[in-house]
Image (cartoon, rainbow over all chains, first blue to last red; front, side, top):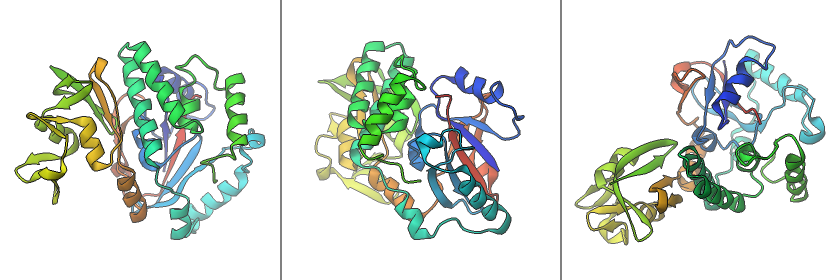
Length: 187
Length: 135
């Protein structure tokens, strides 16, 4: 069972991507986590990421970058094939992808500063939706300062900050993040 | 007056006040949003209580200071008095407990048409949750 969950602030952008910019019919639910409450509860800090949940609602593979193909392998350094093979083995033959210790090691709890950054981001989005542009931007800057290397907070807010998540702004963020040692990225 | 209290992505307009740069809500509003209720022994949820002597600045007259409440429970709070809104985050300790237990946190989210969908709707199945975005 595939469940796709969008982290978009712009609901029309999410609908357009899911319905228009796809070559396969929508046979699975597409949900919207505009407030990132789901993402935060699961520890998702970038897209695309997958989480495997078994029949008993236990996490058997924590959030990890899961590219559908190798189009961006230069950036992700993750081959899609390895992920696909492990997924087939789990679905068809119940092969657990990780031990419990590996799962815990790859599912770190957030530190208080990251949680505050997430709260500031959520506050900023509520303010911006309510028309408080200056206050919203100020709290967004606070979130970015608290978590400068968090993809979901930084890249995810580029559209509302008038920045290009696929252009120069992305490359500047990427280079700074890579120079910092690719923090939060252990796929 | 009313203020906006955001908990787990749920925004509620509740009875409250902004005073001296802080956000205050009524105990009833806090209980409805968080499950923490003001009782004679202190602030309690289920069997767990923070005793009154440990509440410090949480109680202001007959109201609850949301920022002080967050501090007492280890839950970060982002707030903006000029707009009367406070966002209460989950505590890192609570998230660590969930991780240690290995469970998948329950959730209910709207689909593209606004219909609510829950993890529990797919009980007994293997699920691949895919986080994606247009950006």
